Length: 368
Picture 1 (cartoon, one colour):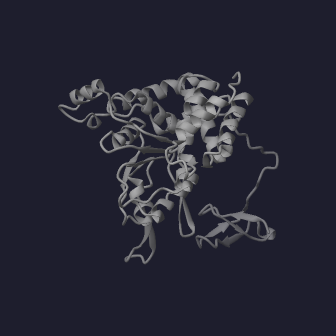
Picture 2 (cartoon, rainbow, N blue to C red):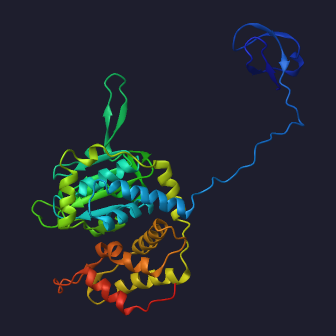
């Protein structure tokens, strides 16, 4: 049955072909109209403009953006150049950061300064033993007016999220972060919500005070791309900090120096940094050596291999290079792998960093 067109309301309906040019009542508007068949020209072709790939950023542009980020964050964080560079590299590598240090060394300020500098939304979650997963992810609330259940987004729905004193939250709440860190999604019932990109989670914990805390399990630690310690500032850096902070806190006047869209473009370019077969084999040799070492109860997982590769790419891009070097890999081995290792119980005096240093010393250095 052919499609006919109503001349009154311009809507289409089915009518027998024998009714063409007849006057009938339109089933949509109810008015009398002459039937007009809908003619589709057989020779017509749809012409679309050719698809063009979005041009990516060059390594120089990525390095420039990263340099601006680092300089902007250093307006607040004084004397911690290496830590700021690693934090920015973690963002470009699409990873998450665990900062383990004593109170008062600017762990929170580092996260806030990074979020403001990148133009990203920021939320802080202060962990306590009674913190529930719903307090972090969000929860469904019944609307008494409509009788419908609506999901209210929790503080995890931001681009940069600081989970302060993560080891003070219960294992149940800690586990609630796994999906967001791994898949960048949050599932509530049968609905899965995507987190806004770029997404980075920074967690802090105090290694000194352990009373009333819950140690992070290996599955949770493995989700963090690397573990970082800021340490105390030098005398000169602390003196400069006191001078800067005399009138007001620098975070109050800090402005963004880039956009989230620019950050995502940088992240895509980082993935294109060349990793030669020799560099890849060296990364795998280091990781596999941790699994065979007699002083280690647990070696690094395949996620450790991927993390070391991705961080080496980010470090190279941050320096404006288009290929990963041996020095970049060796420099990142300890920050990326130390929290993934478990030392034998009969060696309480042995640190994971010492084992990694021994592995690097024993492995031959390839030409990369």
